Every structure is written in C-alpha cells, then in structure tokens.
Length: 62
Image 1 (cartoon, rainbow, N blue to C red):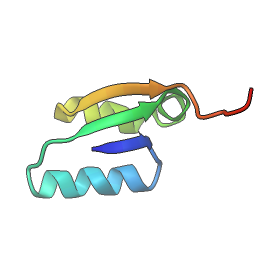
Image 2: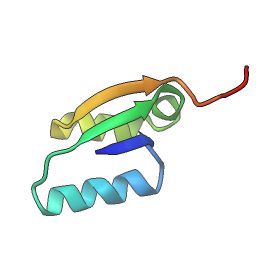
Image 3: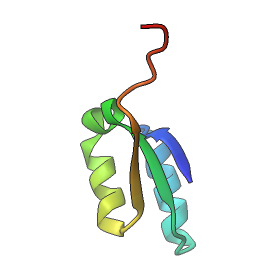
C-alpha cells in the first residue's frame, strides 16, 4: 500500500519494483498530486492497481 502520492520520483520506482515481482498494490492518492502527476496515475490504472482517493490535499488549520 502506498499513501499520499503519486510522487514524481518515488512512485515510479515503487511501480518498477512491484512489476519486477509481479505484486499487487493499492494506492491512496491525494487529488492535488494526481493533478500534477497524471502520467503516474495512468500507469497505476493501466497495470490494474487499486486506486483510492484519500483527500485533495493535507492543508490543516484552515
């Protein structure tokens, strides 16, 4: 399970490792990170990983 992504440098590395070992995963994503990293989320979807929306962002105290 991955949380708070997709991250532009870490998430592709995680996806490569998961592919190497033919593993399944669930990704809990932030909407603002999805918006800024659409290619990564499309890759997760294409592979068939479970995607869940955690929230749009983590802005506390507003």
